[in-house]
Length: 286
Image (tube, rainbow, N blue to C red; front, side):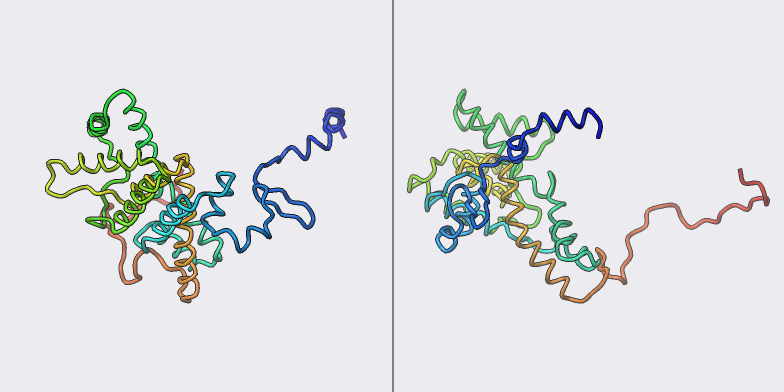
């Protein structure tokens, strides 16, 4: 062993080693599992899965109203069918012999900024508008934000849907939000911002631009005090349920190497027409 390695070993204590992965999340010893300080045997049977998620991420148990809102958001986002790229990719992967874990990781891996990131982006937008309301009223803050986005050619995340004229998940989620505002569980700042955005986006249009699942869950997660990046994490956690279900269905279906379109069909070719390689004199290759 080199002198440098010997010196490093001499300078490193057992405490340095155990502190390397120090954590406030879990405390594990032989015969003991404590999560955020609670013995796991007490959590089992007394805490729901949404409450457990809150506990692990936030550090303490939620109130009944907070847990209810979190559960509604998680349930609403579990699936959107094979037309969602993450689901389609997971199903294709499941037919390629990668196993259930490989299919699921394929689907989750597609949940990036474009497909899967709108909720986080909407939370960031709602937060920016709320900050702006410290200088002006809500209507003006929203109007300024919309004008800026349009001038820069950016869309407003969380509103409108490529498939649904009106996202069927919007109304029950916002109804749950208003119920918890009335109960005093949340203050309602973010739902008011989102509804004002919705109102102004619809102004002068033949068809409204209602909130979609990303906007409605963004309202819930923002009202509950989650950071925007955690909002995306919660969406991924929720959508993983759908990815699991579709991956398993495809895996047990028996078909192998299932591509993006049925075998009789071929992708449209847009290249040059068929041509022949020019004849060359033998030995002329460089």
